[in-house]
Image 1 (cartoon, rainbow, N blue to C red):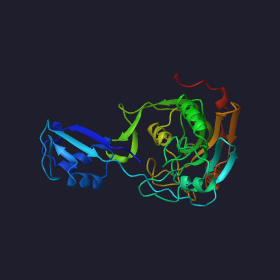
Image 2: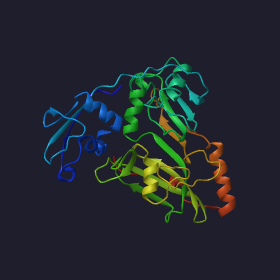
Image 3: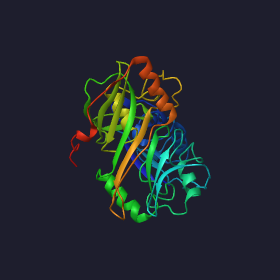
Image 4: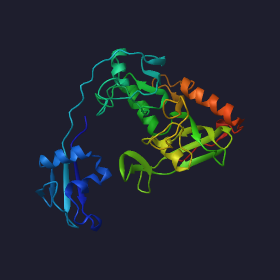
Length: 327
């Protein structure tokens, strides 16, 4: 469930004479669809200089538009029994290997068939620290990103893990097959990320975005056509690795949102796999470390580019790198 929100937006000269509904659709920070905007206007939850207004009313520079977004009801979560790949389990945590094409938690358009629905069927013990809509979820992976995820079974474990995630004490490493060949074997991408100004579904590097750091190492080069990277997250912004790799000119293979439309045959989605997860156990304080191989379609894509373009492994070891950005 998301709580009520109130937005105040001042009309600038660039929007002089524009319709109210089009003005609101052009404000990506509101995170509202055109259907939601029309519904809010009809219900009187949008005002111009304090008075309800029609969607077609032309705006003047300097006017204040207020948008009240009522709280959304919590989704009805039902257990759904389908297989999940459990790598590790104890009384406090679960480590799972998420497959491609699986949404982590219910959202508009994906109310059922999510990882959360499967977790509810799998276990009666899941933390509720993140709310009833996201039981146990400590961090997320995109729908088409595969690999390791950490799930909390107790509230105490969840609070500890969330605090350590914020302090960057949980290590998350990914394998990424990208277009092109980076000029350097190792680098740190320090570029803030925010909502794309023209497309509310996408994210983008922008000066007023939130701090985002991604470290990368080239593990294997396939001529000038592709490269296999290892990426380490220091922050967890939406679509972070996908946006950052596109920003440096090397988008993920198989990512239609941020990369070229053509993809490698047989690749079922973006070639991004969370292959390593390391953390301190929230109760025993023992170090925990897990790895898992990429899915079959990712490995087939690697085999294809090796055969077609040749392979040159890179000797730079991620274990030899520094500690990353300061806290």
